[in-house]
Length: 459
Ligand code: ARG
Image (cartoon, rainbow, N blue to C red; front, side, top):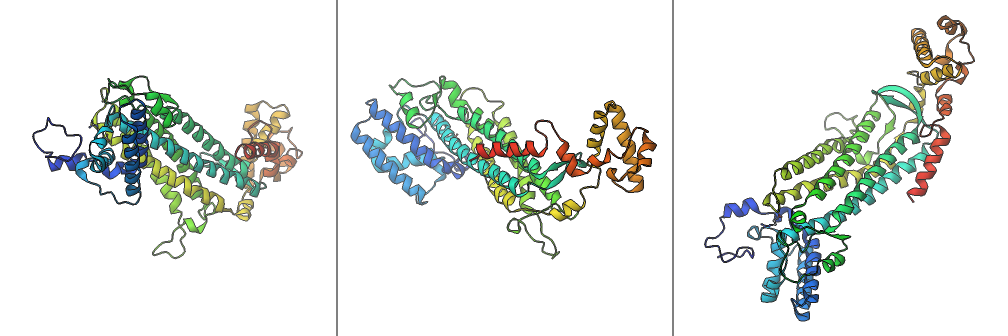
């Protein structure tokens, strides 16, 4: 009546075609096939070790699974909606080849623990792949530090010119953010790397399986201690999606910054043309589409996280079919972030700072005002007084369209009789950068130390 191996003798009616179309997951879970085959091999070996299938049967299963894997690699296994998911496709292909021997593979196993295990294996690999790409992106930022070591940029707060910093101080800010992203991925990976195989449907099994053996074979660090919990647990999916959403958010902020910097108004940076697009009507345009999409696609990833929260928030223990919907969101989040990180690295490497135009405007906006205030503090003025006096000096400078270092003795003393020109010799962005002392600041020696630390760490 039906070819689905999951439809037992209890059924007296065939599945409605509309349900088949509504409930299939093969259109997205086919990508779990390498993990499903690995999991099935580990399970079959354990069944043999425990005496539930013979050596001969195991050999047949191993060979047939290798063949089916090859067919899937080459896109030769027809995907059929009525077989619902990748797990049933592979099992059905096995049964078609081996008959009753194929029918033994599912001994002591349920699709509930199978699907969760496959997804953990997939997520572990996806984390490792993404970690390598994040490392490459960190290295791309770090490699700019040598190239741009003498460039001073304005730092902004509220997108208003604030204080001068070395360009490498900017690059290392992103290296730090990415380092935390990688820590979060590594931490999340520990909870991904737990084996649920053998939880069966929800309560375990009365068959003599060896869960430690399958966990070991699949490289899991631990064996889940509660079958109800682990067959329903999707914390690892949500955690991964959170880490991905945060990475996407970091990339989005960087993309926004470089989009601004690449405008004529800022003219700080020239983006590599391989990653820009043109306009169909305005011939002069070189548009930063990669960065815009990096910013735009962050919305999708944050949406994926939200989807997952809403998906699981009302589920009682243990497996519920809703959980099938976890995969499109998780896959999309990983695919989107992986692609964005892989595009970010060559953009970071290939961009050029417009040194001349940056330098030409660096003394605009009184980036050294805070340095001047701190000089006054060192000369004994209380901070609030110094803050107020420098504000008045900025007003004078603005009025005469000069920099703080160009203020005359008369202009200084009109603000306070104790001020003199010796103050102004310590001004200008170069001096201001040198004046920083605190740990983590943009002081050139501090920055050099940080570059050395990261160079050692990221090799
Ligand atoms: N296609 C399902 C999924 O991905 C497989 C698990 C089905 N289990 C079940 N008891 N119907 O979640």
